Length: 147
Image (cartoon, rainbow, N blue to C red; front, side, top):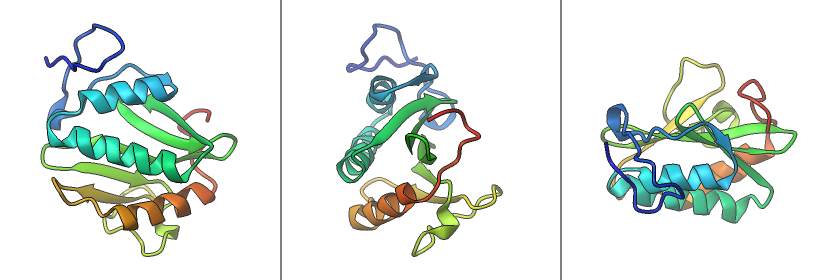
């Protein structure tokens, strides 16, 4: 078990396989910030940068943690993005990724979804901001719970 210094509670955070923090399912910025604070090592900086890019470009963004993963969406439109820690990278999922230009490189078994794996020191903020803006403008995924 690893305890994050920035968590709102004093509860220890368990890191699941690949170092993904186990954070209780909840809506709002607080649980997402808890997740980011508990991301191990360099991945926490990637999480902070992704969150800042999303908030910086999408003023009406809604946030939640579901299934130990931060989700980002637009109220009434659905979820457009989520990210998850793996051993050697942070995986960003664009739920309507096949409609983005250029299409993100990582294929998925889920129709329409595409992934971007971000390795240490390899976040292309300009490209990521473009995908974020495009993804937020599309109808999102509603089957993952209300947003």
